[in-house]
Image 1 (tube, rainbow, N blue to C red):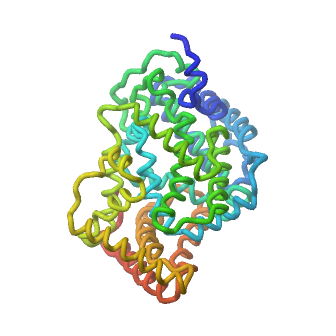
Image 2: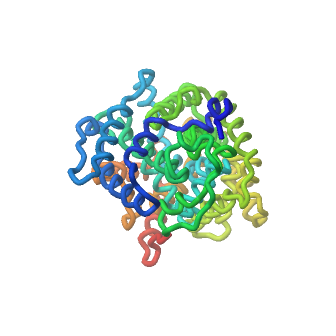
Image 3: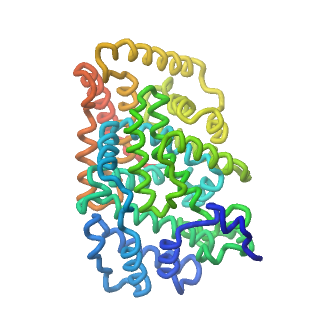
Length: 458
């Protein structure tokens, strides 16, 4: 079977040659999922030592690492770590400040906007489903995402030798390439034009065995984790975040929005995304996002992997809300932030208790009206911001800062993140009386997290 012009031109048939070549070299000679899993585990033990941007240039592999893997990783670091020449340090610094200012609100938007929208593409959800049955392990996806977002968006994450954003992103780039290699059972360049790979019974219960056994039809679905899917995912973390702020009545100035888009595009470059697929204004992002979703929705899969993923995510958030009447709020907030079409795609349009719906809609309307009146006298005032920060704080303490399950990050970086999130307890923009209310809400979340028998076990 020969490749056609469509395959050569479409971003769904393009992946990431530097990372894919690196993974192919590292996994050369492995026969079957067991050997692949062993080799990948050894490589993972090695790259976990990439704990800062500055150490990448002088990194040396451990003596016991397979020589092919060691040489491939050294070539990869020599080829990929530099920021693009168009990176603007001032815009990146502004984006970092915005992220830190939004703090807990950023986490609410991650759970109720970015991740749900990420699940909308059927093929992307199919890979996430295969990667360890994520509807049964929702926190895996959330925590893996946070392990990249925090190092990137903290001060100097992308631009300073002491930061770790570039180092963490290069690890994620290799993860994407490894997923492609496992799903395709070989290098992507060899999969174009090849016959469909049938699904198999997994040879083991691990994530690598699940991906290897998944099966894939490249002619129909393109490459897994292809350029379009990577660009789409990037938009869920910059455009959807900014769109969510707008829909909550907390939209930023145009220059701030474009600085935020710019910083994430720099991240996209390090992640191996083609610049032509990036968006630089909200209008461009809106158009690109809608087009990608329309193309993705045309690829119908049965069974549909999207509703189980979305339902598991909502359930995980509901579990952290103490009052039964408030438990539908995450789904209602996701409907507001993602819109009707995405809600239907994700199966989140089932009827919810009437009183909860009335309380959410009426409460949101009252809060917005109250905010509008008080802002005449106090420009930065926002009850919406306080409420969404309170939800974000509960989710951060339960999912990301749980001491029994620390994020898989170098200890020094993890300490920086803990210091940052601790500072997020108090909103610098809020009037003193609002800060006191927020402190009481956060204290309640801390008490719930510390109560016996409440340790997260998902």
